[in-house]
Length: 296
Image (tube, rainbow, N blue to C red):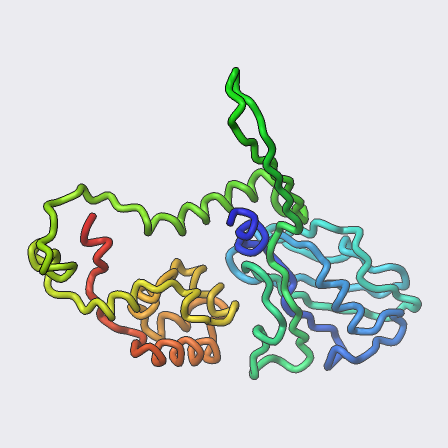
């Protein structure tokens, strides 16, 4: 589980959109530049950036003379840094203008360009597949070890490779925090009470403790995780960034509140609405307090 979290669930930054002056689509070419637009976009996907802001940022490349364009030519601000400044982006054989705008966003996992494309996208903007994860490789092994005279112990050895935006130690710490957060719902702090009468069941327990009868089918739906809704990666990333991790968290939000979330547009809202309608729920519901929180 820890390895999977390291590879897919840590937040990172990536270039998600590219706009090149004078270019309308990715199958074009630029006079005086060796690479075509497809190759330039592939090179930009390999650009490792770290966005210290919670909002998207626009970086720029502004070159007018021949030579090799590298990551060091990217113009940034004090909130974004380029890690691999030696990355070759393009090769200019003539003194021609090359003006590029790069949109950098934060996210988790891998988000293909098709999920980021919006119908209202500006002409000339090329969406890119975004690999947000700062961890590129994880390897582990378990071997026998001894403590004092006891030899029945195991030792876990983990090797973690990152892209340079975080250290392996910090990546492991963040992954452990995420794992702990997902295990918290299984922890109960309620002291054991009197045994339930055999005929009462869960409903009897709630009535005996003063709580109104609960629709157990509704409670089961509300306690589902976002993953069980089978939403797109984009929708899941947007909702989790707002601390929405369960269906209960989601249905208590209104449509207007969700549209205020960064990168959450009408297309994503339509997807969420359809998924909830499929299980008989909707946005903006007033739902009963969860049984787990009532027991604390």
